[in-house]
Length: 297
Image 1 (tube, rainbow, N blue to C red):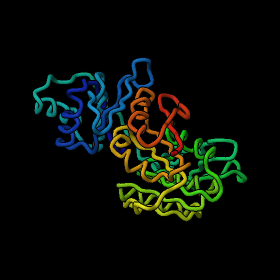
Image 2: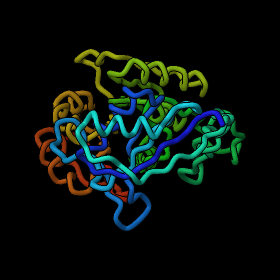
Image 3: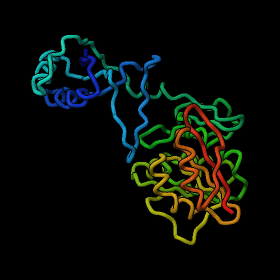
């Protein structure tokens, strides 16, 4: 046995303080999950910056990883005492054996078919269809591996929209997957912006891996530079704040814009925010997410 895993139920108010207290007692890590995950009572958490929410799950499961020789029962007792909480008497302690974590992580990512001609393929996999347009990616810390509905929505929109020789700007590029896809679909100039240095580095690495020339940066392009296609797959609150900056990148008289990272119930508000610059409509829906698109007049 390499480690021990402590698991118990608590409420949303106590879960995070208990995680902190367990870490102070000596736990190697502590996390919170929805105790009702994968059941009809599951509670999705869609909070984002600037959006007031009540975070956490009323039935929360705390998981704490501890050394093999740690007294995890004493850890839990002391954590409850430190927080003046009633002692938790129902819990489980299970062994965690040493494993090939790299292999386990890689096993979670299989090739993803986006369309008849577009695939996302982890670098350690052979492509199921070598003749297809294959986006080779290493899932890392940057957002965008193709598994999320918003990424799929944007890729499907790009496949319908990109024309040979057009230019594209990816606002909030993450892993660079959308810009890389645009290049492989025929765009001649692709650029991307992200405020996260790790995302920019990941996007540059992924572009090299795909033999794509792309300009990924922390900085916005010059004011005079406009693009035939602009895509932004971020979250609704940043999309609201950044509306003037994003729309300014779209070429007048025909430039196209697609936005995602938007929940179905947020769509009408985002459409209204962008109305002074571009008339948007719902282009597609996947699960609870939408992709909005429009053309600049």
